[in-house]
Image 1: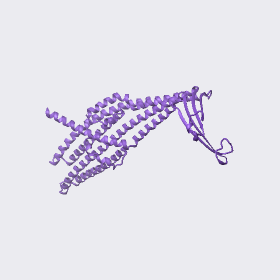
Image 2 (image 1 turned 90 degrees about the vertical axis):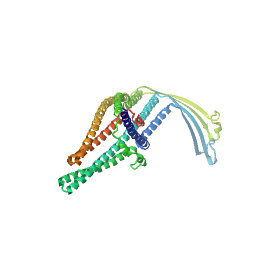
Image 3 (image 1 turned 45 degrees about the vertical axis):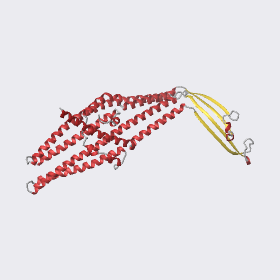
Image 4 (image 1 turned 180 degrees about the vertical axis):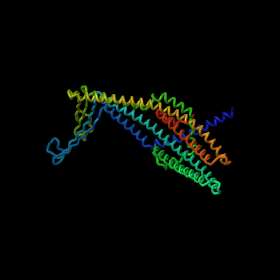
Length: 450
């Protein structure tokens, strides 16, 4: 009993170490991506732009203070303005004004609400960009690990074939093997060599894709600190209980928190407000504007008297404006109807997208269930192929099995290894895709395994 408990504890400790290594490296890669990737930088700039647009729209509610200085130089004979020789003169005038639009029919209010929705949309887009960036980094990272592991498996298979080929060649030179046997084995070795070279190229391509996602060059110094080869050995470590739990939560909660639905809600609000703004043209427009002005002539010599009624002039005015287009051949009503139609079309499109989303969610969960079963079967198949290969190799060394049987067993064993790592990669992508659609992927990658 104690031995069993110790073994389980040891396995759990190994699993946590493996997954922690993966997440540690992913966190470091995400940190690089956030600093270097143009996608995330663009999302931050859009937030700033939307925030400034909202602040500008809010400024329409505030009074405007203007200060204007006018300086006129001329030549004439007017004795009142004469100030110099030969009829040259200067005029100086300083005007301070305070203006406020008290009411404009609600136009500025609705425009401000639209800007606020745009700001909310930019914040949501930034969150989605971070989630998408997290997914892409994780996808390229594990794809890179998969290519490393694929190369290791092919290289090991090639080495085993070379060792056996030396034996076949020696037997052929001694006349114990026919030329057909020799050439057949040599062809398999050459094909294996091509596979190894191809897998090396795939590693380079995957590394370039990873660097492109990170926003760095393939020879970046930061990447030299990562233990990609060590992490590749842990690629097939999948926490199935956690994955199944996440799948159940995904199916239950994703529609309540999916970013697509939130973006649809924002778009619908903007469309509704736009329709409201258009419909304002059907009614008379009333605007109230008020201003207060102060003028100070010859201000350079009278700045000490600024604000004085004796030296300057005050005036204020309030303007009430009522505007209404009595007849325009129905143009305004048609514009309102068009805006309403566009709003209905958008709502219909959103309903269609929601139905498609529900369908995709169900398909995703079905795919994950199939991948989980395939992962379990692949693990069992790997154990069987490993056992079968060892038995046939032993029989081959004892001259009780043909070399073709040994080659076939070796290829099946290598194929089973690649199958386990491939389905592990697909499972990880599915897991990350679920978390991304719930806006939980970035936070999940920041946490260590419990």
